[in-house]
Length: 226
View (cartoon, rainbow, N blue to C red):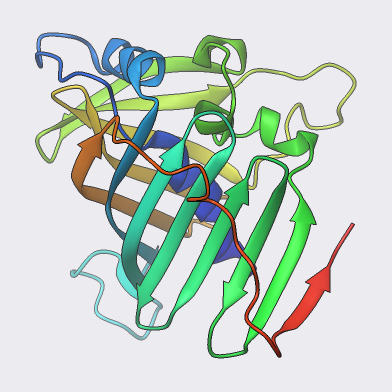
């Protein structure tokens, strides 16, 4: 479950552009423009965890869906978002600019943890940060597929770290269409794939000041992690 939810940080990172661009623009340039122009957005998501078929399963049907969730998202630069999973269970992942909160309705449990500096070197920096994508990633044009221009995000080497970066994924790709991110594909070292698709995006919407405030219900279990 933690691995699945870690993709949320990556999924929300690519939400919404300020203005649609022509498909003549490269995928990388569309992504750069979208990061510069988007301030707030709302929309819907479907997130799937996929795996290759096992030896005793049919090999001709491609990747198998092992988990799927769907819901709504909202974000505001810098540092605020809500990733609201509505099906098949109700959970919320909330960032208020200082901390990350996971609310599980079934468990009646809220977990608080500091946002931390680690986010600055992940794709979530596209949402939380105000700097250029190119500060943390090399943007590499990929093949066109499924009607989208795909861009690979290659983390730049970070000095004084053993592996150069702390990302759990070996490949991060964004599918762009008309200036908007429509899909995010994350692959880890074991070949597992997380695919996030975005829909019904509303750009630069007006949001109330308390939109990202979360107060646990009375009687809820509250965990605070350092």
